[in-house]
Every structure is written in structure tokens, then in C-alpha cells.
Length: 136
Image (cartoon, rainbow, N blue to C red; front, side):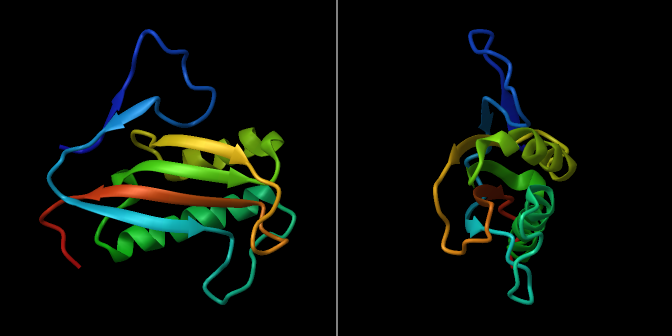
């Protein structure tokens, strides 16, 4: 059973691309993905000063991590998003819609004052539930 969105009539409809809650099967393997930034495979920062480009790189990095463990972005059930400017909310969610095309993960987004690199605008960590039968 893949993850499923949980919708409560007692909660407002989300104002971005995320689920109020997600439920996933208890069988399988949990994957915890560390915070991914716009750091590319060559070690540089993609999209300095450009939240859209950085969000694309972060999503590609999440996809690479989950793929290496034998999963897909559809297996990600929760993300925590840290941003330098909450006014980038709409731009970030526009990019997220391109990568999380099925049930969106449950999500928290907070604004932070600094990252380890002054050029980072966004960082996302994730939790995925991978099928039991997929082993790397």
C-alpha cells in the first residue's frame, strides 16, 4: 500500500503543496534523508540568489538520495523545509509540485536566519517509507 493522504474536514485546506497528514504502511524500511541544499554533485552551489533554481537542485538531490536507497520521490512521506525568506513560499511550492506529483508529503516550513553556506536559500530533509522488497 503506497502512502495515502489524510484529510480532515476540521482542518483548513493546505495553502501550499503538502498534505495535512500522510499515512504509510508499517512494513518496509524507513529512510531518513539529511538536509539537502542546492549543493550540486561537483560541490558548487546551483542557483546562487535564485530560489527556483535552488529548489530544483534540492529536489534533484532528494530524488538522488531516495533512488540510491531503492525508492522514488513517491515514497517520501514527510519533509522539513528551511528557508531564508518565507516570501519565497509560492515559488518553492511551484517547484515542489513538479517533483512530488502524487500524494504530497506532510510538511513543515520555517524561516531561518543562516545556513552553513551564505549562498544557500533553502534546505530540505525528508523521511521515506521504502517497500520491504526493495533492497539496495
